[in-house]
Amino acid sequence: MEDRSDYQGEGLGLVDDKGRVAIPASLRQALAANSPRADGKDGGTVIIGVHPEQTCLRAYDPGYVRILKAEVEDLQARHIAEHGKPDFNLKRRNASGEAVPFDGSGRFIMPGFPRDYARIAENAFFWGTFDWIDIWDPKTLLDAVGVDDAMQAACRYHCKTKGIAL
Image (cartoon, rainbow, N blue to C red; front, side, top):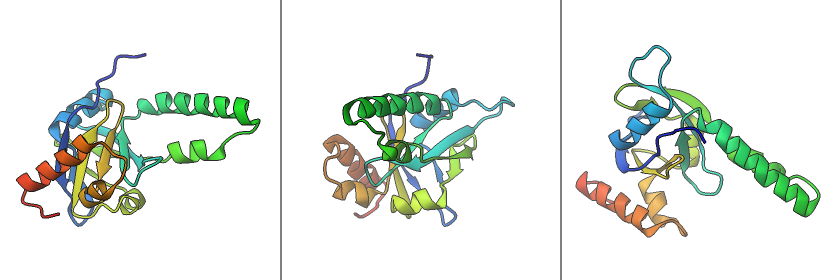
């Protein structure tokens, strides 16, 4: 596998009325390293799509598309071997994504549908997962079942430090 920066870190971003939000610095550095601009300027491209199983978004660099596609094709091959037919929803669930630019400070505009799907309004909680970044509405994350307790605790912490009541 090629040398890639891992997405590790978390943070809370304020979302403005146009859907602009800034990726936290710890995650932005990895994203910029994985998707450098051709002109050498700060910033790059981030792909924003709905998470295949949870009510949140998934953000990653364009280079990860090839890796994700290979993983999904492997899952599809195993599904066909076991069931004799494809699971058409495998690609539907995992191919969601829109490439958007981000500037040197990590600001980007969240695409409308994914933002609405994830119920993200005024705040967005970012959590690195090595391969991609989860982006959650804080209340949706805290109400979610089956997500990591430490991630929920980090969300509470960041909301508390910014004076955001949940």
